[in-house]
Figure 1: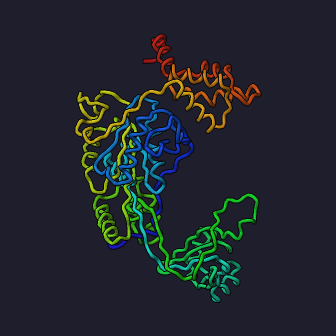
Figure 2 (figure 1 turned 180 degrees about the vertical axis):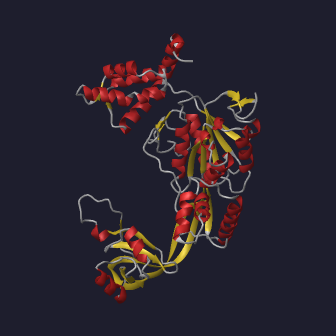
Figure 3 (figure 1 turned 45 degrees about the horizontal axis):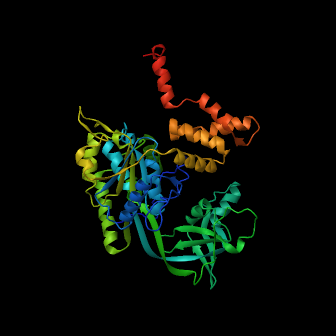
Length: 467
């Protein structure tokens, strides 16, 4: 493998909807590293947040290699929230790959392959290339049909848009000059896919012919009252220039891009797509080849390695084989920063017979870990969290109802009290009210049991259930 097709690499980052932790904005620390009582969407857990702040500093200074962090605490104490807060502190350009321990059990690929895939998903590569480009605002966009094809299509009464185009004229202008370019017909597909039109700012790579839409020129920013466009200023200097292009990809993106077979006819590719399994393993040989090219890029100064964060929730669900693999993988030169989370105490290690260990993690791996403890929330902290969640979900609740829900959360669990916010809101709206009161909260508590109350009822009437 001599080169990697960086332009064709598509991101494999997982998209996440607005969910339980959508209010998390950071760790909420002061400049001196001490934790605010409420900050960044987090409440309480001051010691754990300050420890996480130190972890962020270690990651930024690249001193976390070969180490890993374990968040240990009972359910509902904010372990996942802290991991997401760390990712927010590191910024968007640092890869963050969340997964759950049970994800490794698949009938299609090996457990170690799932772990390796996520390891490489959490390692970023920032590629800087100085490219010769044509950049400017589009003032002319005209496809030219070949004479022979256009006459034939007129005679037949049909026209094939792509095959009949012989060349495309694209006119670009900057604040300094204008230039009309003749480009090959294959560029028309890129123009249609990106919906490029007059007034858009684009750049065309001189060597590869790749065309990229940067945004709409800000001269058109007053066209409409409501805008969804990304407006950019008119480029400065000449149309033809040298420009530094920065692209952020992960090692997994490179694996996927280079694992797809190139060439072959249409029928072969079509049949291959139908017959291939849903998920295929990437060979170790391919990964080694990619690593060689990546290391060469780093040595030449073209690329920079960005170790991201791999977050494995419910780490006790992994078995002894996975833990053995993690021990070796953490020692690798291309290893991300790993964060584990567990809510288990002293329990049996999965995949073994009666071998018990703290948190269900083997002791040799525990020796490598920095352990951060999370503690149960107090009633005033539960109240603050409920207040934040009600604002995020745009739910109005009066002070007495909030106190009642916080007291219920202290008696049962934080998760159950947060889950009762929306049902209480629906009950209030059914009564033609916008604000939740104590009666709505009480009705929700009566309708929806918590885990502890359900267990008590099961103990009382367990004989009537099927065994």
